[in-house]
Amino acid sequence: MARVRIAGFDPGNARTGYAILDADGNALKLVEAGLLSTESNQTPERRLASIAKDVGTVLEKHGPDSVAIEELFFSKNAKTAMRVAEARGVILAAVAAAGLSAAEYGPGTVKQQLTGFGKAPKDQVALMVCRLVGLKEAPKPDDVTDAIAVAICHASRRAFPADPAG
Image 1 (tube, rainbow, N blue to C red):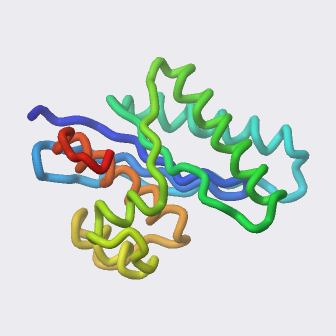
Image 2: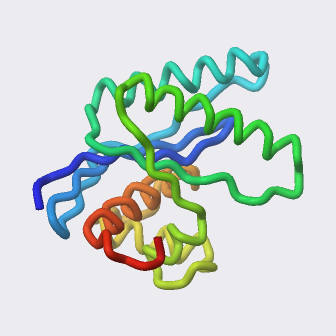
């Protein structure tokens, strides 16, 4: 299987984690990971425009072959859920503008793929992220680690497309 460059995103209104991962067979190499942040004093439309612009810049800089994004998980706070959904929307629009499509994975699927347990705690996921890409410690904040986890999940699912889990 040829090398594939994957962009992974953990969407958020204030903070969006991103990761660029090269997958070559079973070998994974973290190229870059970071955080796209918006200012809390910005209007909602300015925050969304900033996210779209920054995602577009990441995609243009790294030229991924594939994109993975974390699906929205259930939130008890409807306002927070709406803001994250809006951020996901502009990320998906930026992906489409770059001529790409995005695979979407729920948190349980990502956890299952990395740890073998769909309800694994964040620290267990972070430990597996570190082991799989050779980091000494998990990046902070968690949004960055989560973006790496989404990219790893996509690389694994790509390697085993017959997986009945989806």
